Image 1 (tube, rainbow, N blue to C red):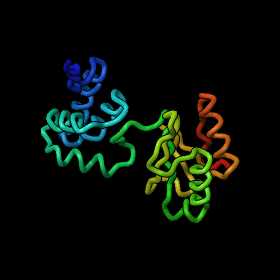
Image 2: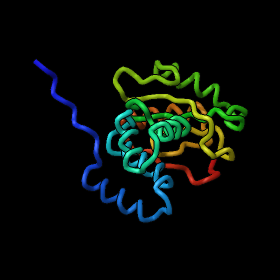
Image 3: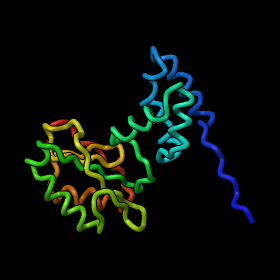
Image 4: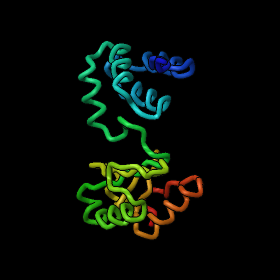
Length: 176
């Protein structure tokens, strides 16, 4: 018995409309690459080779160019992340403010190393080069929410809130 053929990726109706509107906002198709990738990831959860080729075709770009962009930006996922994707900044400001201690704490608490996902699929952990929030270091992004001015207590609270499926709120910039 043959396995069912997997459907080819295409934007759903809503995302096709968003894509068409996005094309009108930019001067070139290449300029639409980042929002198009974000839209694909929103729809599928991560970006497969098939999706990268789909985007390349829709924007008249080479698949290699699209792939290199995806590999450069940490906001794009090449494999399914956990329900809560933790991105811990490891650049100079965050390192000086304690991100290494936070990384070790997260790894021990979750039982995973950076680049891994928990067995239950709830958490994935990734170290990233910069989250652009040096003034509020150390910083971690949880899905699309920035968690700033972190310490071990705050990290534990974030983990517990995620486990309880409670929404995270961003602190006002510079709040301590």
